[in-house]
Length: 258
Ligand code: MG
Image (cartoon, rainbow, N blue to C red; front, side, top):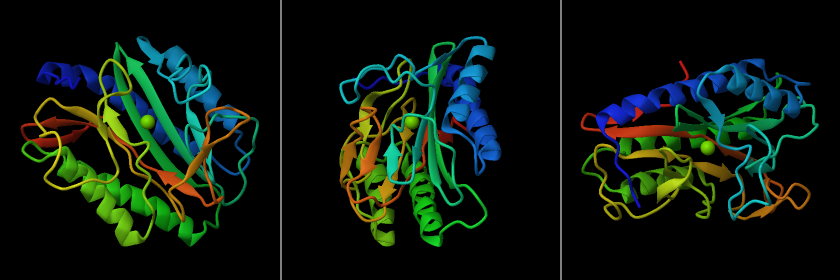
């Protein structure tokens, strides 16, 4: 069921969005060559413990697509991993492409956002191009999320940008409604038909999250951790996500990072 939020409820969601944005900004600044994925996880854990009213959306999360509770505070997906990456004892190397996906609730409302970047001084231009594509697709998808448009306008905008860049599109995982729970209706696919689907209206709060792999749309679940989704051909992935509210005046990003 799609739930619409009142303007007051959208205001109440902003602390969660800002908190998630603030943590991702801090993590991007502190993540370097040699940073361990478990340090990143512990940093988020501490931030959540120190913030009154904050709760992890991940630590007890056990949906049908993962294996048991996630048991960590952030998703860290490196190189051929693109979604749901379980943090483990790994020190980042020069040139690694990392995606950080974080969802936290504050006072019962969820914020959900993701960023991708390359660590070290010598990023591969093809990695930067992939990241840029997800960021452009996110910005364009947000811009299409206006009252009167349809969900298919957001999806097709994202898909068109992936096609311009020449990246395949996976439709199994995409954006979603956000509210008191992290994953609600509607599903926001990363490709679709313009002019089709749910008509967007003020009060709809959704996470838009383009993610692409360089040369395949196929993923598999890492059998060791039961969660991490990796590309079937070993190619790298990137992921950009914001939680946005659709208002009378257009889209408003809740997970701001400035
Ligand atoms: Mg997310």
